[in-house]
Image (cartoon, rainbow, N blue to C red; front, side):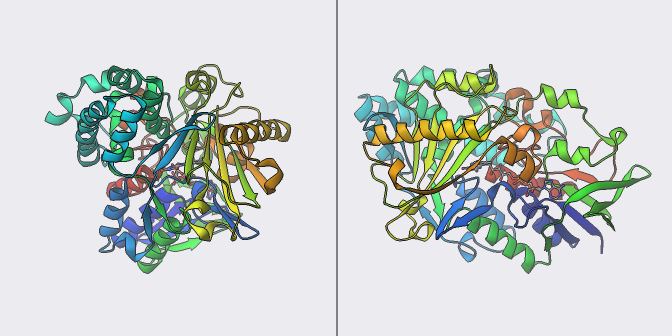
Length: 481
Ligand SMILES: Cc1cc2nc3c(=O)[nH]c(=O)nc-3n(C[C@H](O)[C@H](O)[C@H](O)COP(=O)(O)OP(=O)(O)OC[C@H]3O[C@@H](n4cnc5c(N)ncnc54)[C@H](O)[C@@H]3O)c2cc1C
C-alpha cells in the first residue's frame, strides 16, 4: 500500500486525506498545532466557544456532495440550521437592513429601501443562479492545469462577464448605495476588491441570497470534527504537534519529511500548508516560484480579530452583523492600493450565541469581531487596543447600548498570529485573492514543477479561498494522484 503524508490539517488537507484513503492509500496527516482544523480551529474560555476563523457556512450543496462521495450525509456528522435573518447590515445609528432566509423576503426588504428594486433583484438573481450552476458544475472542480479547462459553450457566451467587474455589474442594476454594497459584499470572501473581481463571480450572490446562510450547531468546528470522524472511519491517521521542518528530495522526487527533528519516509507528499511556506521546506533549486513571484501576487486580506465574552445578552444585532457605516471604498483602498491601518474600518460582528445557546453560558454572549486589514502590515498590541476601542464605541453608538462595561475578557488575533500559528505568508487570513489574473490555471499549480510526488492543495491553489473551495481543492488534488 502506498504511503501518503499530508502536511497540515485544514479543510483542504482533511478533504484530500479522505479521498486518498478511499482510493486505498495509507494516509497520515501531520499538523504543527496542538489541534486540527487550521484556520478553522476553535477557542474556548470560561464556558464561551469561538470559531477562530470561518463562521459563514455558505454553499451547503458542496458540503453535502462531499459527504455523499463517501456514501454519507451531512446530517450523519453535524446538525445544520438555516439562519433567519441570514445577516444584518448596519449603515447608521439604528439603521440596518436584515437579509431574510428566502429571496421573497429579501425582495420585500429591497423594496422597502428602494421601491421597485425587488423586481430588479429577481432579474439579477436569475443570472447569478445560472452562473452558480456553471461555476459549480463546469469550473470549480478543474485542476487549473490548462486554460482549455474553462472553455466550453456555456463559458464562451459569458466571456463578457470575465472582462467586466462585479462592482460595475451591480451598479448597472442598483443605484442605491446600500443595496449596491450588500450585493458587492459576498465577493469579499474571494479576497479582492469588487472592482477587481470578474462579474462572473456574481454567482456568490446566489450562494448568499439563493442558498442561504447556515449555522452548524456548536459552530464551524463541528464540520472539522465531522470530517475528521469520517477520515478516521476510513483509516486516516492524524498526528498533532508535528512541525514539518523539511521535505526530503532524492533524485528530484519527494521521498519524506523531517518532522520534529526526525526523518520519516513516504511515497507521496501533499501539502495543505500555505504554498510559500511549503516551498520554503525545499532547497531553493526545487522551488517552483521565487520570492518576486509571491511579491507580485494579490493576497487576500489579513484580519484583526477579537474574541470577546460579554456578561449580558446583546441587543439589536443578528448572528452575523456587518457594520458598513463608513466609506467602503476608502477601507478597500487601504487594504489593496495604499496598504495601511484603516482610517475608518468596516467591521464584522459574529454573535453565534444569539441562535446557538451552546456557544456561551446562560445570559451571556460570545462575540467575535473581524476588521479586514492589509497583509504584511505592522501589528502591535497598542494598535490592536486602539482598534478595539474604535469598534466598541461604534457598536455602542450604532446599536444604542453599552458594551464596554460588560466585557468579561477579550483575546485578539492578528498578522503576527497568522504568521506564527499557520506559517501564513504576510499573515494573510485566507490565501490568494481570486482576481481575473489569479483565477483557475493562473493560480499556483497543484503539481510541483520541480519535484516529483509533491502536490499542493488549499486556499492558495484552485479553486481559491473559503471553506467550500478548500474542500473542493482536497478532492481535486486527490484526483491528480
Ligand atoms: C478570520 C477568517 C475568517 C474566515 N471566514 C470564512 C467564512 O466565514 N466562510 C468561509 O467559507 N471561509 C472563511 N475563511 C476562509 C477559510 O477559513 C479558509 O479558506 C480555509 O479554512 C483554508 O483551509 P486550508 O486547508 O487551505 O488552510 P489552513 O486552514 O490554513 O490549513 C493549513 C494547515 O497547515 C498547518 N501547517 C502550516 N505549516 C506547517 C508545518 N510546517 N508543519 C505542519 N503543519 C503545518 C497549519 O497549522 C494549518 O493547520 C476565513 C478565514 C479566516 C482566517
